[in-house]
Image 1: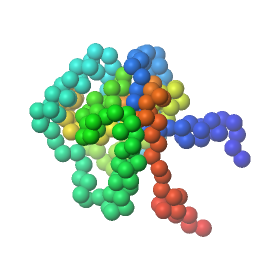
Image 2: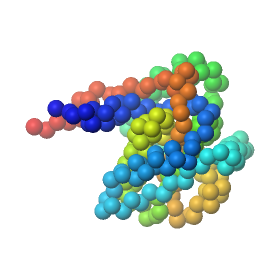
Image 3: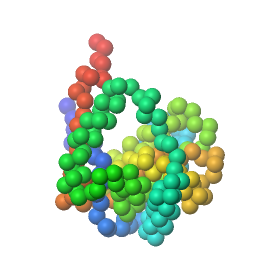
Image 4: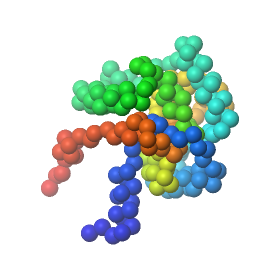
Length: 221
């Protein structure tokens, strides 16, 4: 039996979605501070809390976007991930996601092929989070960072914000590193866009499907 508080938590988990359309409304320092205070309750191995987060807003974010887009448009890019080494099941899910999202992209009025650029722009969210970790990485500390990012997104949901975890901005990682003066010993893991969802926009309404539970959850009784 779930009590009222746990039901509220479960509703928050269910409500979290990747938002790709944000209102042009700045986030107050007080709001962002509260979001991150809750995010830091994420678990970590031996309570090491290995994450480092750079939260960029306002004119600084405009300048960062400009530098990133300049690198993107002038071909100063790097490969992100190794999709060719992925499993067939995960490739299939990626194709399904693309097919599910395409009608929403069309309704949004976005040009074909603009998705990567919009990702690099953090979908014009009013806040961007660059999540890092000092080397050496270690698989457990990488997991810690993942749990921090998930908790951050749940905290954002609880504060009425939308979020989107982004890997595409790492295509122009040198621009991010240079702008924020991130030391080479600190690995940039992922980015997160934060802001109030523009709920009237199709790309804030999109919800990806989920695999059937029995596909990848195995109960051993």
